[in-house]
Image 1: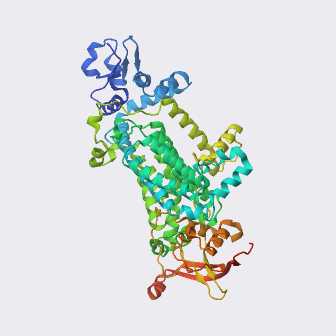
Image 2: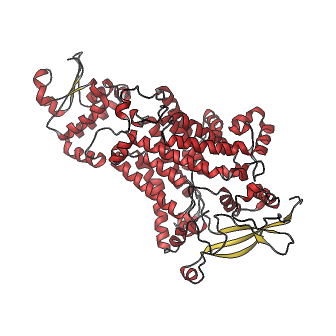
Image 3: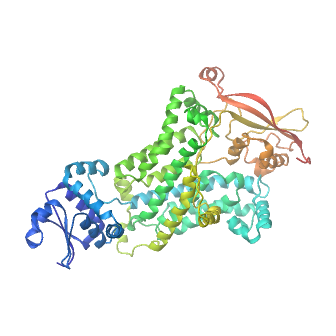
Length: 613
């Protein structure tokens, strides 16, 4: 006998299905034989022993059975050696696992049906090469959308003549922190804080994202686009402080370690994606969804407690779509039921993403349907698409249609003649996994109302890595906005006749239907929604915006739909405050208006050029 032999019951369908799975794990290091065919070759094993449990025989003459045989089979096959270590070293593990084995062996039909229910008829290990191929291309498209959206806005947002100039921010931080500013604000903008660099980073990021989509050099390109996007987010101030920016950086960082190292486009299925990194993605999806549900419970907002939050949501969210108007008209009982479903999807369903195959699939489809519903009724940029993409990692290769698998495997036969593409060394993956998991506990437990004191070394680690957005906290709409207020900016040359500046997408004209704009994010429109929740003194950027309008700044004016003063800038600016509500069906039929608005007074008093305010 040249290698270990595992004897199993060849007449047991349950046994044969699991042996097929184990073969994938151990390869040719273990020989699997039905005891009915070879029992005479092993006189040291009786037929009654084989009927009770599997038997493992080694070339050294050693003999193991039941649960110990399972763990030693895995260890000899080079798979999950820690199971054998736990069996041998941790008190109680051996007794518990042997008892569980006896129960399973005595109830094979029941457990066979349970396995089929949880895993399907195919118990062979899941593969994720095609899934990775799909995920990385989807991530490339999201990076492209993010960079392209920023490219047409960034000069007006953080450019030299923009609303929140990044150059001024960098000079301020450097004066305060000295050399430490380079760590606290990690950005290539330190090289030359100019419009050319900001737009160049966006353009280069978009081009590299397209190259990534085409399959060029995945790991290096993912590293570059992550650095470029981090460079912009770090200096973006209020305009790049959204949770989806953090989510893209966190997912993009993990994707670097999921990707292979080949240079030219070829089959990504030639190498296996890291199981540890896939687990980190599962943890990210769990934190994202679970935190979103828990912050609603922890906020104490009564509308979430009595399930009335969605009565207001569709009308008061930042940028609704025209479908929001229709959903808003639904009966209150519908909104209360769907609010309850929100809690179920965000708090209960995330636990099932770690479940066996079929339950995991059901959890993935539930989360995808939830994100699709949110995407249809609100413009949340690439956030919903990125969350759906994270859900894709819950499906293994057997889920994808044949034409996708064939396309992902293009060039595989030719590639077999070449060496395998380089992968991240195992020690690197272990270090990254431990590092990310350590950083993940504080934000996750904080939303679970944990108020314990963290060790100083964890606090230091969290503070040191925070500028890089490697691990982030999540949770949208913890407190539901009950009333929609909108700011209308007006200019005048004589303080008698006032003309309004119109934005591209935020509600303004009552007869203008809400639009679909995602995955593009009009970031100034978004910030105007947040500004309306407070006052202009709390939003210094709003004052700068008014100054830029009185200067007719071309970069800032490009962020708006109309400039009512194309020839000469206004001498005066003011901001009016309005309450907006969706019209009812009868009003809309008669007037065509989507919104009903009522004046609330002045948001910011009249200001003029040269005036200090």
